[in-house]
Length: 356
Image (cartoon, one colour):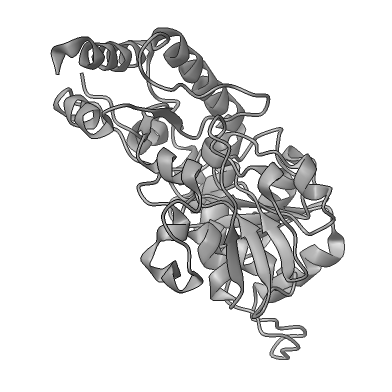
């Protein structure tokens, strides 16, 4: 039985022409950059997450970057973040000349450990990640009084996000709500902050061809917004299917040597990530059984080659380093069926029973 980590073809087929109709609507309008499709998507996603406003941007990475720009982050500043995330979380900080300060994770959540956060005179902001769709502990971070920019790239639709100054989303095709290419969004209740983001996404131009600040080309395409709007009505049911798959895995894999992820309110299960003894051997075994897996992430951010000048060494974030040697994502996308979940679970059990 083939079990893919993601099946966008099946997702597209189930939409029954809605995406094609949305694309045709944009083509007929002749308006391909920003415009009413982007404005409508901004309004819809702001309402979904209970925020006052949203600004559509070119990618999840750029959502982080432009949010930090709007906060004035730059050389000499420090921004606290997690060492266990996709590269753009720390990359956005470093691109502005600021220093990423890595705080270790809690092993049971894989999210930043708020209890280890230490604020200095140089700390300008905090960037927690809702990793794999599990809401991070925001209350303690918001209580510091510093701007909190939530990396919610993997948590669109979650009820557990949005307490910070900004919440950033990614619409990379593999996300819970995926475009037909890149796209992102910044959500906030701070209208002045949103105005700053909106200005920065068009090279800081206002009025046209007059540039008071240095921005960038961070605009969201109308075609991507239309595709996302066609998919948005299905997001809730897709996330519910992910929750159902995760619950079934947790039931079927109970008692195995795997460290199983726990559920919390608002968890949207972008990935189902276990901690696996003999991980590489298990991956090989599952691959031979036609079960796709992935490692998110094989090297912690503080140990990435480009961050060597920061002076971090092995052992500085021991929980994140331990996790990178154990984490393994099993398929959990909404187009899976019960037989596939059962098959993956049976194969995992067979491996640890000695069939490998």
